[in-house]
Length: 333
Image (cartoon, rainbow, N blue to C red):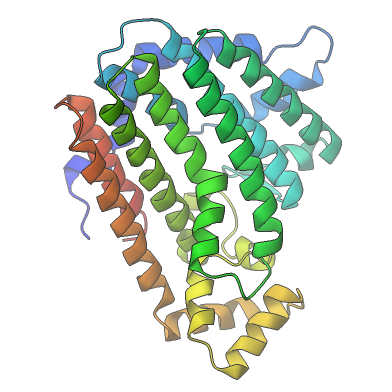
């Protein structure tokens, strides 16, 4: 799919449209990540939060609220909550995955230690709960607290599913809905709820976030086997080295003969990896057209996201969100 000028930088256009709100979110984040008693907390959080991330998830909350006509102040608190939940999970993920790079920079656990990353992640989760109660809205509190539990559940499920060749596409989708899409859909849904939008609009916002999150994760998994290190902010092949059974591999395993299955069993299940194994894995993915098939799935989820938006009122931000769905998938053109 060629990327036309209209979809090339929808994140930049969204960022521009939400500039004043995002500035308020960033100010609130900086206030809440401070600590009088533990200077390690702002050191670690600043390293991650100021690392040039796109702030996509909080932008989704602001975009949803604005699109359905919200005029109050509390979408700022909800957007900051979403970013804190996301940052906490990143800190914990990097410890679990023993990662050394995040957004092209050394991870917090590498610069400090695992203890600092885990405990500061806990602190940010606690801060997110302080923030999410401020709007005094039980429904948004329910959505965000449920999402926090779902994310943790998805990560735990991945621990066992990721290294088991019996993991199929349905289990993969369950993991992705947990660890990634749950926060996307919560981010968009609370924007509608805080605006007191009609139920069908709130559902459409949820559906958009859910489908966008799934497409986003599939693309992330594809980039791990075919992206440039500077594009993905981590090393190509990290998922293979970390023995993660992601969608391209699941598709290749489903088509594998006995010899190929033995290779996947040795490298993913047993973790017995040697020089040349990543290249052989890439060869098997190509042999079974697994990358193309996974990309087709990502395109379908992007189309589902765009379809959900048609149930929302016309708005310039709605068009940007539609372009964003295209852009997410265009990264693996």
